Length: 640
Image (cartoon, rainbow, N blue to C red; front, side, top):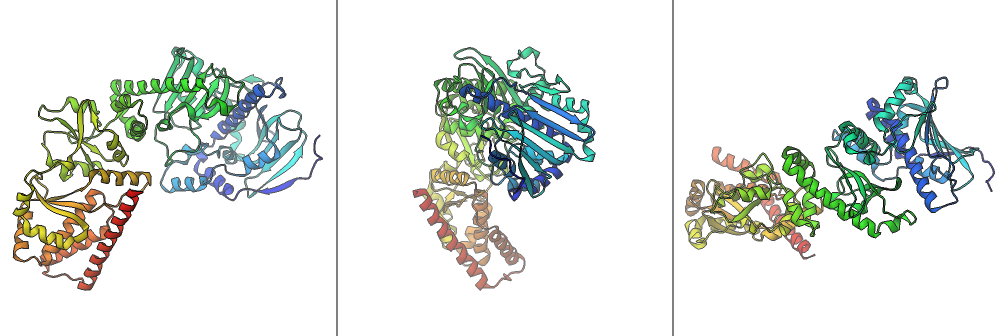
């Protein structure tokens, strides 16, 4: 029994929504036509939901045709988009149109705005697409009736801080959105304009879109059409409809298979990596079975590391008479996942071999995900490993595979060498490169995830992977004696900032380098930095190695022998060590480097330091104390 009619009720929008509407209106004005795409997409979602419910709930009226209608009234300057979908209850109206589903949406959009990103790329991504109607409408009216009840409701808003809801009479389930267009939006009343926009954005919506009594969309799902009938622009148009963006994809895969299970699928790689840091709550491919949408984002079809892919999968063998939750663990879904992953990996391999420039473009944006896949997917590592790409000493401006690296190895090289650094430039200029034959190539590991990767990628085709930092000298003690005075004063000056001071002949042009006393532990530190999403990491006290053949080191050693308390020598040691720490990726204060540089220059040109001794002593004491605290923290984190 229907509840008695009530008077109109006023509600306040969630505080963020008026601001969000303002941001959308200002940033998207030149692309405001997308409002129609968003309304049609919402209508299609409502139709998909009621069609699914009809399968498991026979009481829902199935005689009502599933369709979308667009109507215009030039005299009243209104545009209406209606559907016969699932409809909304009063509470669903409040929740769906009065609040933002995902917390932090406004903050994220504002952050993108400040960073110079184009906000249109995320419209629709956070469920804010509906609010794009306020770019073209002075007032929006939503009339809806849910299949769950006899009551119907009307929602009205002018985009301000509040909206109104009141009961209405509506016989048929579904929703209609009525826009009272702005004076400068009259073009959206024109027949040709509406047909143009439907063709551009919504042509492959599977439900009929009626306008002036005729169906104006293609309707036939693209993945069900023969490939030889599909044009490149059709794939791009379908992508825009599917994802709700205006950009084109980087590449796509369209495949049909009958064994071991009938599948039709179109998979897209976006043109850019996702803007979000970390995984979104909702991701996955659109899953259909016999023209019924099972789920708009079905994550069980892909491994976690491929969450950036977009697309559609149509599998006829999925049972429709069970719940969506049960489908997630259905054995058919497990088979589909295996088939998809096998075909996607084959696709990536084909692109890497036949279109190396396109794969390089792909790797630049999504290589991080492939590395993650190698770490996570033990079963497919032998396939993923050949998808990995790195820059190197011999190939600083291009990406090479491990296979290419091995094929180019000279006969006297028996290992695959790599260097860990913060950037490509730091890797190319790392003093560690001097420790091996200059004719041997060295891979650049410059992403934080590489520290995880080296824990798993230990060999390739029988060749062991070796960190160039770990290459050792043979006559260590003899080398130390050659610069003993400098070693002793260095230990005194740097104290707990270093673990050890040694001489080396592995360096050719560099006067010194910092080597990790435990490379594996350093890799773990960088890995923890990656997990915590921090740009740098605390560096444990390292081994400082002096090049015993470098003129500067020999001169410093001579000075240490004559006058170990010389200020220029002491600050030169501090400056050299601080600079090496920055190169190694430590988060020591750059002001230290600046102060030590200033002191060295003043001593060299003025013969004295202008800063008081007390200040210098305090700075030195603070640095030592901070280092001790960092070391304790690193040890505690490692033990945990």
